[in-house]
Image (cartoon, rainbow, N blue to C red; front, side, top):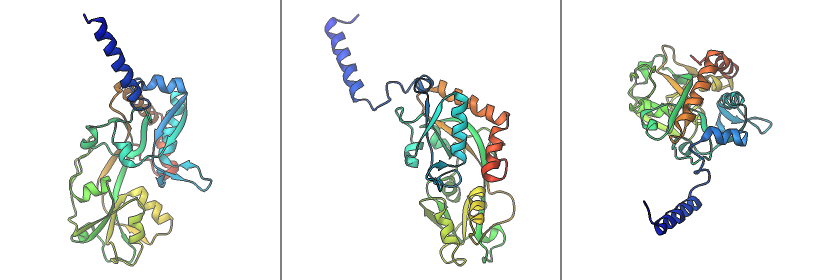
Length: 279
C-alpha cells in the first residue's frame, strides 16, 4: 500500500514523463488500434532507389516497395502515408510511433534483429557482379585483387567485406568467392554504376549489386554487363516493425504471407522487375 503523498508524487511523475515523451510514445504499443483509429498506415521507405522507391516524372513517390506498402494498407482497410527518413533512422528502431512499419527492401541481419522486428520476407534479391562492356574480365575469379564498388551500409558492402550475416530461417549459407584488392563505397545505389560506365578500370573494375538494379542500369543505357554464372548470393528482404508491439508484427507477417499465397507479391515483382522474385 502507498501513502497519499507517494501516490501524488507518482501521478505527478507520470504526468511529467508523458509531457516529455516523444510524440506517439503513449500509443506506440498498440499499433493496430492506432492505425485503425486514424485510418492511415504510415510507412517509411526510400525515395532515391529506383525502382524500389523514387520520385516519378509527375513528382509522386512510386516504385516496387511503394506498391507493396499500398497493398498491405489496402488489406488492413486503411489509407497509406509515406515518409522517407534516412536509412539509419528507418532501420535503427525506437520509432516512437513516427511510422508504423518500414517497407524499404531491408535485409534481415543478425545485427538488425537486436533493434527491430522482421515482419515477413516479401521478396528475394539475387546479387550479381557487373563490369563495363569493354572490360577483359570474363569470370568471377578475374575479380580477385580488383577494385569493387558497392553502396555503403548495405548488404553489398557487408558481403564484399566478408561479414554478412543474414537472419532468415530459409536463407542459404553465404559463401565468399572474391577477394577484392580495394573496396570503394558510394552514397546511393546508382553512383557505383556512374563510375563503372566510364572506360573499364578508370575508377572501378566491377560493381556488386542486386540483379534488378543492374538490369535497370542496363535498360537506362549504361555500357555494362552482368558476369555469367550463379548468383553471388540470394538476399531475403523483409518488412520491418519496431520492437514494442509483437502483436502488430505478427499481424503484418500474416498479411505478407497472404500476399505471397494469392500471387499479389509475384505480380508486383513482375510489374517492376520483369521476374517473380517473391519465392
